[in-house]
Length: 87
Image 1 (cartoon, rainbow, N blue to C red):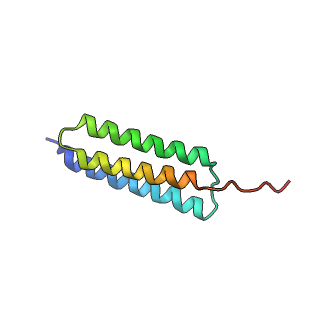
Image 2 (tube, rainbow, N blue to C red):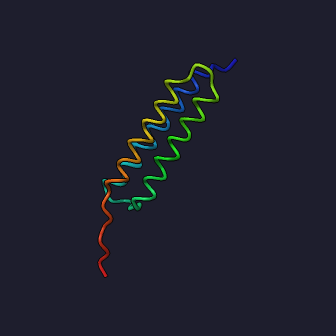
């Protein structure tokens, strides 16, 4: 059968890759999300961590990892300064 722990590890790795691509695009100015959008991404990651924590028995480390990723993303969004428009 399918090993849920291996699936959760793949899910964390995929999430880390997606978050790394997001940060790379933000720092290279390919995208310019507002502070609220980045904070909402962090909140969604925290909620996803809570769902993983509650859905899978013995997955407290995985849920904590998702929550920590979301917390760091939300804090990053809190300190983001909006770019000035050039009008």
